[in-house]
Amino acid sequence: MKGNRISFIAGWGAIDSNAHMANTAYLDFAADSRFTYFKENGFPGSEFSRRGIGPVVRKDEIEYFREYRLLEKGTVELKLAGISEDGSRFRLANLFYTEDGILAAVIKSTGGWLDLRSRTLTCPPAELLELLRALSKTDDYEPLPSSVKVAC
Image 1 (cartoon, rainbow, N blue to C red):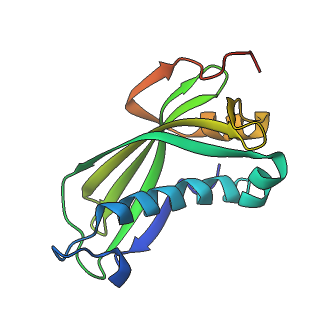
Image 2: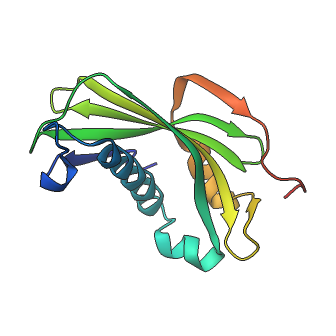
């Protein structure tokens, strides 16, 4: 599988009033890394639209270890922290590293897949489930319960 890492620069718009990268910038870079991974592996944003599904995040947890200052470079690595057997629920981890390879932050996002027509939770298509399962797992990976009421 391609690209479970992206590079970024903590630009002007990512910096908060404390002169370090804002928490919302971490969340944006995490989302960018997820969609980049899917796109680079044959499931671009247009495919989500075509199939009428989208990821819905129910919870984000952020743990910080080091600051990013203006124009500092970093990378974000995407890993799988948990998934249900049917793929309807997932927990993805984004690990943020400094240019020197030091762990700066970890975001864990728990969510599922929304059917954009019925506005209900659903299972992902087989190709998307395969991409999720292909990610390397975190040390604290755990299986999750399904999010759907009717089997997919």
